[in-house]
Image (tube, rainbow, N blue to C red; front, side, top):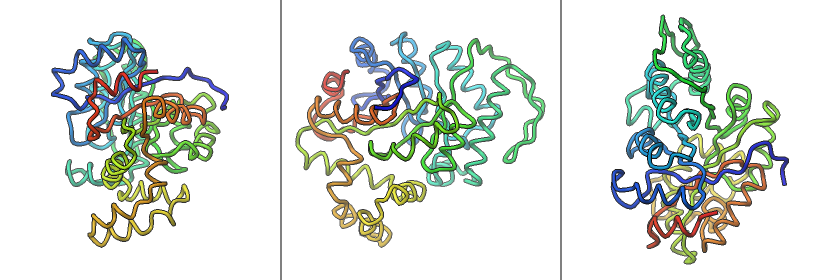
Length: 325
């Protein structure tokens, strides 16, 4: 059991899977009733990261709201500050900005923005926001962009917590040094033995939030099939591959990576060992899933951002009840 600075928070990724966003008010209200503490959004190829949180700020007025993550590249500095300020005005004191590099696929292939110096871009955006959200006029040359005479006219009553998405040592250190903590993704509980001390060496008060993928079914083969499909989209991205190599999974995953690179996706999926899928994707009964999530928290995670993965026949409404703390 790690020494704990922050309370344990039990969050859910939104929007949920069942139905369009405007129909999800009853589910969001139910999350609040069941004691979930946070709503976390992502920004990849679904709706933008802020719309679900804006609705959630009104539907669930006690819940904390966070992004996991907004890319540091796809909004310019001023627009990023305006976006964050809008959430801060909608939910004073309840918004956490999760910011990260994202990936070359999302930034370059989908958004037509050069994915250059991602470490510096994320660091520079954090530094800019620290200035801009106070209402101070910003004229500053950063390593990756320059801002001339910007002043935010929106009123930020309480400065938001900023967390940086991080995988390997450089970003983990930067998250601890420049921000209020780190957002983690696609890791096993035991990986925290390596990760948590790096962040907290820089900042003993750092918050660690982890996006945890959950397939709520007791059919292990179904869960592993869904997990393999989801993992393929992530662990072949260079930054995630490098992370898992660092975590010591090269021998277990090399065949998968080789087959994927050769274009044989079916064989690549089959080559992912059950043991690796079970490490990275939570599945089982509600009690088994909650026990596994608690393993992350016992290893140092403060905030669980649960992401329910559909496909097993379990509805969002059922999953919410199963996973309630």
